[in-house]
Length: 404
Image (tube, rainbow, N blue to C red):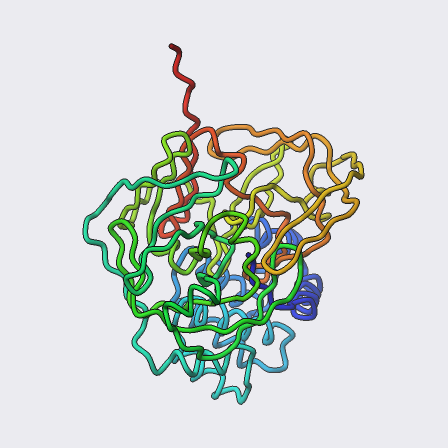
């Protein structure tokens, strides 16, 4: 499941203002999309553009205090085309998706706006902030792997045991209305989100007293509940465990052993930095010609998709049409879909080849960067996958088949 807000006009304005700069070294927009900040000649940019790009870099590497100061500065420059994107980035990425609801409301009031999440943020702001506690530094728990790559874990919601899919594409956790009738979580407000097939859905958000699994206990957890739960029924689960929870821990999924190691995150300066984003995680992989691809990491999906923008980075490529079906919360699409033939990418020092990759028309954006595609757990089902958001790290180790 993937949240989405329309950024088309903001992106157009921000790209336009960068294009107007004297970019003798490298187009800042291209460098920003590739997270290649060293390739930018900041001397060719005006002060507002420099502040905005620096804020983006600080955001990506979790230097949120520095990012906030710069984004406020740009956001209040109302005559600049970058003011709008800075406001969006500050309100949604730095405040809302990080749970800083009071700051969201305060800044929205300061600029005299009522953005999309204003009502919900106002209601969440009066409650204590989400709190996470680890009973031990690490713990290995059993999980169920379905359809080769979906990770299903037993979670306790207000003390009730349920089965949830680890879904990094869900910014909040989601359960069915039926389950919520038992949990008796009262609605605070509604939220709009876009499912995996591009359909907008509006559902209520409530606040759980507690959520726990393994060695992790959380208090005051926002949760969405939906009547559109056919996907849950097919998977024999009760809902989704979202990115707002997953980013607060480091975990390693062993698909063959069907275990999940949950760790309390600690700073590791040696970790490869290839996982970015705030409300939505982006994994950086590389094409066979070493071009970077910004792939939205959605562990609640079971496929690898490309967008036209990402496919263009492959150089010459061939497509074909064939019948297929795509699924999302509340919607299924059946029809003839375009597929890219022969897509190869690299990550964690390993190469992955796919005979056929869905060429999706649905666009997604994170941190005002349009993603090149979507990647799930599916390519990594032969080994161990590690997600360590604190250290911007995604890792994978393939397990050798043991001979008998």
